[in-house]
Length: 475
Image (tube, rainbow, N blue to C red; front, side, top):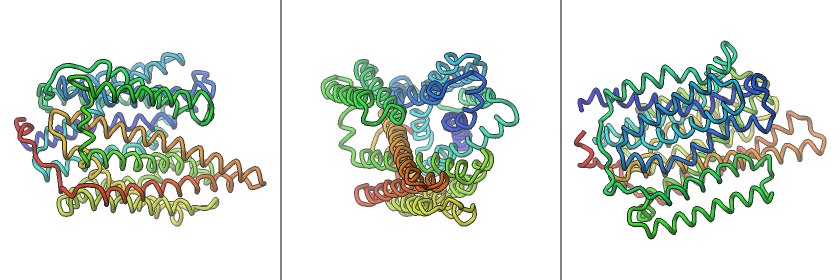
């Protein structure tokens, strides 16, 4: 493929992934309007978000493996088509059930796209320097798309209606499909066996969906309730069955030898810690600005703009240069250390905070941290696998981000809520009590990021970048 066409193909891939990333946050701003229009109760409304998270988290591993078996481009196109059609169904929904079902299909399509996009980048860019640059662009889209979604959701909901947070995906999805047919390499599946481990796929998908369900409902049902503990227990048993099956079947969905690849294992542990800190930062800092400082949805989106711009500056050039110069380990540790410092600053934001003194410095540090660290985390996860298992490795690291983010957000939101209730019970005002809760959550998030930095610095192999795969250079 001509070098310029590869970069055009990367833009197409990133547009597809951006749709998926945007959809995790763009809907949140529209929830009050959806609730009023479709007469949702508080409990039922949560399913507009949870239906998406359930299928998205549950099908990441299977989506990546199917890409290895049947071709990454084919699965990418199927995923984009499913996501785009489901977005149309969401936008046209007039009943609660129709919207929730369409959101579940959106999550399924999103899981497939996310799981194979990273593999397609590895297929397209075999030169080490170009691959590092391409992963930087992809990393920026993943890390910065969430805050863009909050801003875009505010604009669309206030100026048009909630239906447009879904319908905006239609022209993008159609454009991505048309461009993908022209630009993406139509390679066959690279897996050595075309056999699909059906029972492995069923057990791990149900286990992940059940775990996500237990996590997203944990605050409402109670973390120590028999329902939550029972669901997490069944999910754990199913995962144990999955690993037992993988050790015995001839063509496993997830070959257990992957867990002997140190960079893959370490990068996934780091991804869990990193996502736990970042998901909680994004969600809780938005609540702090809205509920304590009185910002509107659009003002919250604009407040994240400095972090996005800095993230772009690092992700779209500087991060690749750092990786080429210093390898994967040092930029990863440095980026997470910056993120930890940013979260520590947020942990000192007062109830009468000001943007310039209390929010902007934290946003700058977190923008630098995300811009520097995201690329090395992805490169480390993919650095020791061949083309035949790149989809699976991509699915694994994306599952780590998803589960880490869900667990981290649930745990830190619960901590913030408990601390807020404690402070309110002893007579503190609402703003002070809310701020105290958020401060504790940001402090724990900073500890997660610092632990990720430490593990990355001590345990990652010092390989500078993933080496080019001879088998992948045929494109």
